Structure formats: C-alpha cells, structure tokens
Image 1 (cartoon, rainbow, N blue to C red):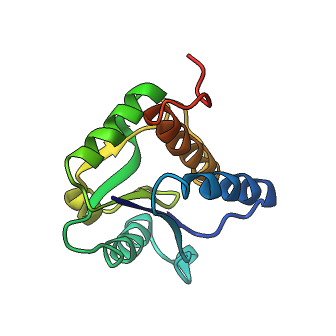
Image 2: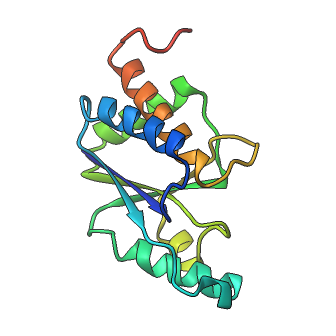
Length: 157
C-alpha cells in the first residue's frame, strides 16, 4: 500500500514545514508516502466560494488513479482515537488497498464532485484547525498509527 497526502496551497510557516518534514521522514520507514501540494487557485479572490471549491476539486480529482481510495479530512468525518485510527489503517492495508489518498481541502472545503468520489471522511477533532496546521497534526497521527501497528513505544497508553 502507498499513501498520497494531497494539500491545497503551500505551507506558509517554517516551523510547520520543519515538523511536517520530521514526520514524513519517519513515515517513510513504514510505508511509501508522498505529500503533494496542489498550488492555490490563481485569481481566487475573484472567484465565488463555489467556483473556488470546484476549481480545487478538479485539481484534486486529476491526481487520482483508478483504484485509489479517496479519504477526506473533513469536519463532518468520523473521529477516532489514535489506537482506533491505527486499527483502521491496518484494516485498509489488509483489505489490499493499493493507494490511499488523504486530502486536506482549501479554506472552503470540498466540491460536490470530490465528496461524491470519496470513500470515507475522517475528522481529526471536533475543534477547527487551520488547513496549514492540520497537515502537521495528520502526519504525526499517521506516524503514530504505524508505531502502534508495529508495537513500538512511541504511543504511550
């Protein structure tokens, strides 16, 4: 199984980039992992919210291969504990998923077309985080999930 992590727009804060890079490097020990940044939409300030979601959605969908499992990080998604998330990841691996594509959308969320294509939605918290910060939180939780699966001591119960 491979994991692709799609995000809209570059990360602006260097401290977030440093943290994200740290966990990506750790993750690559467990699984083929790629984080891909979809550039911000040009002239987005002249677009309506719906037009922006549609344009971002088209770019997200263009990154998918046949057979990919599209998972959205979405406020309306299912919440997990870290252990439950690791069990969910392990279940995806055992089910033979070739590639899971996790996506953090832009500031307005996802288009209808992206929602229609997604297999599952995950919420990392009932709280709202910036789409910049959620990147670091997600890669850390993904790393934590793999250490739990492997029985390594990173996660303390």
